[in-house]
Structures are given as structure tokens and as C-alpha cells.
Figure 1 (tube, rainbow, N blue to C red):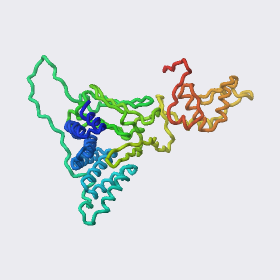
Figure 2 (figure 1 turned 90 degrees about the horizontal axis):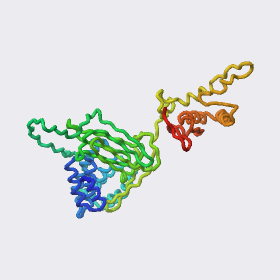
Figure 3 (figure 1 turned 180 degrees about the vertical axis):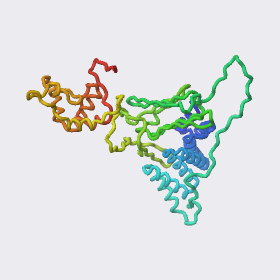
Figure 4 (figure 1 turned 60 degrees about the vertical axis):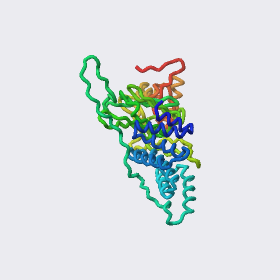
Length: 409
């Protein structure tokens, strides 16, 4: 277990002095990790006696780092810790201003109501000219960020043919670093393939609606991989991460078990994280799941497909069915071959089952026909649905009868 993990365990166990120690060691290894400063700021406020000045220093560093990365959730958390530290220093005018900035980012933050009442109560008892009323803070603190310590150059070793030199750091070129993901009913697993990621210098941040992995490259630059926002919220307490010799792997616990993610990223930032705060600074989270909305497309919806020819426009298929002319009759009768084929749905009047489905298709509305066509073709004939609202959500999976196995040819 690394220092950050030890710090998190100590914070959860209310051992705040140990939490300060472990997060200090973690920051020494990675001074650019926003979450470490936020957690140490919390520990400084809750340790006995409290150290609000140290908590303020950490919170302002966190605000600046989060702003440079553009992480809205981290910015809100950092400003909240900053406001609480200012309240502890009796700078109530500045505290109120910071709470206002938090409200602009996350107006649903429930702790704002509690802290707002506390600040107003303090300000009511002050005279107009009192120094504690003044607002002197700026939204982005004008401070210097901690610098990453550079290792002293090592003297070159004499060439030898007996041992091959070991390669340290990331060995995969940045342009070749890639990621993949898959899901189960309860989890989403994200894998970043990069050989030689340094564990002690890598930062992995798992938030309710975003994840990020940052680590230094041999060139001196940082590689930053992030998914923000995720398709849906995750349970951060049950999510894990690990770094191996050839990859980094995140196992994210779905907030809604059984929910199928059509993609790993969403289209908007969910605003469903609500944090309540008690008088002693303790916090608890209440999460409400929000499914990201999909922007309308004037050219018609596009549905997932694995066909090499690309996605099929089911609206066009139904429209063609409406316009399709009837074949010429031979000797007053329509040819048998013409009456048996209707854009992929077989019709055999001599078969009772097929006759039933033919009649069902004939009497169906446009959306029902569209659903039947899509479900029948994409499931390889193993499913037939008339519910377009369900079918349009994605590819209809092949569901063979019990005892049989579907194979790809």
C-alpha cells in the first residue's frame, strides 16, 4: 500500500495526524496531485488542535492545480476546502466569497446552506469597518506551485559487455499509448497500455463522474489521460486501480448495477453529486444517477452496428416499403416469388407461423415495422420486437434457443 492509500485509510479511521504525515510523503513523491492537497487540507482542519492556516495553503494549491487542468469537480472541492479554512481563520468575508464561487460551479452543493448560515451569523455581529468583513481573496490564488524535484545527474558508468543497461520510466512512445474498455453487469474496466509506468510518480484520480491517469514521460512532459465525464456515475469507494509492468487498470463500480453503458464517455457533465456537511466538517455524499442526453441529429438517428457496410438507415427502409410498387400480375395472379419477399422479412402464406408474422408486419405502424426489421436482422433471426423505443437504443443481440450456441461465420 502506497503513502496516499495509507493516508486515505488514516483519514477514514479519524487518525488525522497520521493522515497528514502520509499525505505529506505522498505529495513529496508527486507534488502535482490535486487530490492529495484536498485530503491533507481536510486532515489539517480536523486534527486537534486544528491548523486552518496549513489547511488554507493546501486548499489554494489545489485550486490552482485544478484550474490549470480544467477539472470542475476538483475546483469546487478545492474552493470548498479553501472557504472552510478561511472560516477557521475568522476571515468571514473571504469565506463567504469562496462559498459563492463553489455555488457557481455546483449550485446543488447542500453544505453551502449550512456554511452560509454560519457565515451570516458571524457577519451579523460585526461592525461595518471590521477587518473580518473585508473580501481580499481572488478566485485563482496568486501563488507559486510546488516544483517537481529534479534528480541529480548520475555519473556515466563505464561501458561493459557483461550486463545490458536497464531502461527506467515509460518505454512506450506517447503516440502509441492506447486504451481499451469493457464492462460486466456491475463494473467497467478501463485499461491504459503503457510499458513502465512509474508507480511512485503516477497519479490516478477516480471521481464519481470522471477518471484520470497522469504520469511523467522520459521527455520531461506529463502524459494526461482522462475520461470526463463518464457515461454514468460510479461508486468511488468500491472502485480500484492498479499499475502493472505493461499497463494501468481501473476497475470502476457502476452506481447502477446492471446498467449497460453504450460508451465509456457521456455527452454532458452530470450535476448529481450532493455533499452534506456537519458542524465539525464531516461530509457525506448522496448520489442521484443521471443518464446523459444525446443530441438530436437532423439527418436521423444513428444506431450501433458491426456491419462492414456501415449503419443501416431504418427510417429509409420503412419509407421504401411504403413506396415499393407491387409486381405485375401474371395471368391475373401475383407471382409466388414476388409475394414471398418484402425487404428482408419472409412471407409464406402456406405456413401458419410465417403467415401470422406477415399479417403482424402488414398491420403494424411505421415505428413497429422499423423495430421488427432492425431486431430481426441484427439478432440473426433470433428476436422480433415491435417496441421501437427499446430497439433503437442499440444493437439487438443474438439470443439462440436454450442448448444452442451462436457462432460467427
